[in-house]
Image (tube, rainbow, N blue to C red; front, top):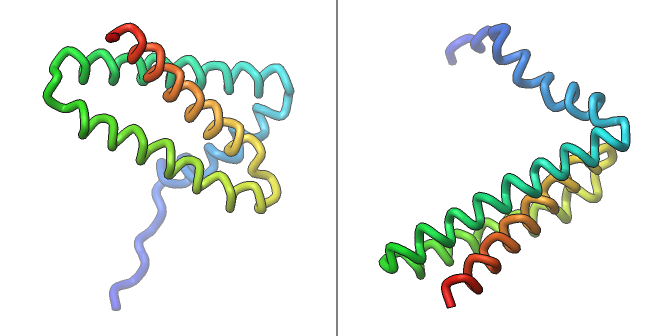
Length: 113
């Protein structure tokens, strides 16, 4: 069995970034601004996905399947995260991403009608 690999400084930095983000978002206004950024980013991604698949008209079923799977996986991840203490920020960010993606897709779907 090979010896375990040594962690680099970059790997330690990546592992500690989640804790640093949680500490930074301890302030309610920072938490709200972070959630708003995730909401608006996922909204624009949802709009872009809807526009691209709508104009190509070839990948509609595949892109719809990918979006539904993404939203469903996020919904299923949410349950176990709620049972773990200290995961409120992660659950909030996942919820905002789901809402933004869904609203972006719905708005673009109404534009294409």
